[in-house]
Length: 512
Image (cartoon, rainbow, N blue to C red; front, side):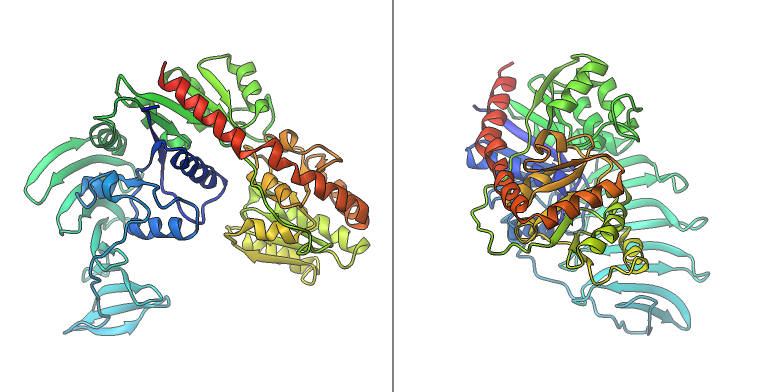
């Protein structure tokens, strides 16, 4: 049991989706069970301490959870796990950067909280502040109004990055990263036309060159090997994100166990068996022998992969757990349907809105709440207006309390093109809201018993979707029975079983 688990991420956020939720759940479970676990973030974020606090305050992570960030540690601002707990308090004194500067004339900028600074009539600086009047960045210009660099400041007012611009295309061609002592500890050279990093140099203080790297991947590998894994007797590293698979597979450590978790459908459209494999997923399957195990969330996906590629390494299925919710139906709104998902084309919320046009013709009191955020928000609002559904369909925005939403709903709907498991399905059902879902891979067929605790609808069939919603809303007895059956998902996908499977797997693989 003396293994230590590392989970690689880009950057967790409190508002993160299903993948982030599953990482947080796994970390909290391992902490509760007394295991050693750390989250490794390899992405620059100018406010990592703010991210930690948001994750803690939102309840996403246990106060003992450790979120280590590569940039903080390479710069010497953090010494590793010892000061990377999410309960860490940033006690640095804040630095105030006033808008006005002596010798400069100031004019309002093109955005709220932005300002242009002129010297002797020449445009020199552009400052951008947040709503709390904290400086976010300063852009600097030459006499031809070409942007030459951008300075970025953290929430306490400390400079932590300078981007230098290529005057030909106004894109970044090099970046300097600064620690809290004011030294540039890292510089990257970038091809401004492609955005590809061509060279990375690591420094200590202002006068010592440590190492040169050809790209960021080599830098990440160096950090994990030299700063993270070096002294561990039984390290286990888990890749939850496909763009970190190559990094994990490249690590050199005889004691290291490497694991990947599949969170999503691996096919291209139309996302069923026989479809082309997504390029970044194909990379995993081409190199899967470099891993000690792959975890799938459903038996169906594991079987599809095994059928197509064979048993290339150890395959395990560990599904997400469903929450246990102690509640009655007093909050339930009999004619409210809900959907919790990103406002994104892959979620096909336009299908649900169009189906609801048919629903309200039969059930005028029906109400649809769409909870989320994303690039298609304005498009979805236009569809609602065009279909005259503003009295029945509401875009509610992001919520950090999914359970509260599902407790009010009489049912929820999933219209995604594809999923990996569908945490919103188990959350909805545990709260007593049956799920009406398109027949997609993967998740719905593993969780929903059609006609018992929800419905599986022919994929892409908007009329059938509307028909089933109408049937459900009109039948009070069906609502009650299905709600009771839906709650049983907490037993089928129990947290105890989830914990048992993960602990057994980690114990087994650490002793190979």
